[in-house]
Length: 292
Image (cartoon, rainbow, N blue to C red; front, side, top):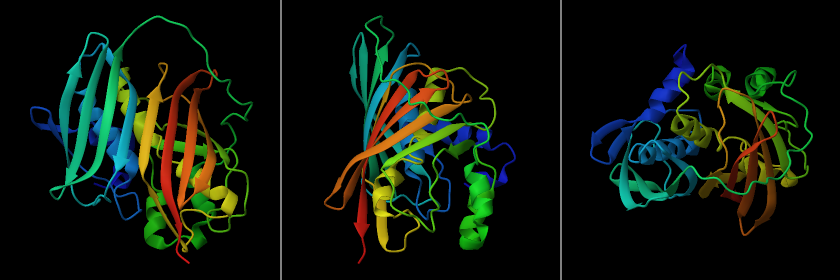
């Protein structure tokens, strides 16, 4: 599936993440080609959370997920998701999801769901960061750097996207210089999402959370995904949902990398609404292996 050629790309993304139920607790999702050569990790995370969400009552909402990438996915093939209903409690529900392609597991995830409760509240404050207005979008940056991007990849980067990203402190991916391991990215769905179902907004956020994250650990070393002397891949992904949000309103992704060693980089992220509410936290470790 190529979301670049459908005029309503957000609707196409919603269909991609909704999945087809083919048997009890078994779902099938199509794949999209974003120009990476393999299935984008955020797609598998979002689809796995969607599969798990479809097996729990509507008054339970995902509050955490922990996933491991085991093999690269083929963007030309569909993916089958099997859901193991491990526990159904009064307050918490636990699911395990395995994503299978060509008869082999490519991703596994544990997800926990919680019914609404009252309790203590606190959060880290949102940094004082410039708002999204006037910041160059990822598509505008690709257009500006188009003479440096291979034509096949450029086509994917310039097409209409379901999620718009605006990086406050961007790095030129083809001419990076070392800088501190932190990024600030505003993002939102390109159009209004035609449902207020919290599960839908959460699995779209899970999809979007894999963008702009791992690159943070490459910044101190003057490297990017486009550096030809690097092998870069996500190894795992964890996420915690704290408060309600809307994916069609601006969200700020604050990412940092506290450590890199042994060919791996750790990245953490905090996601805020425009009115400074912390709605989700993310952690991911990735392979960042120099090839020479």
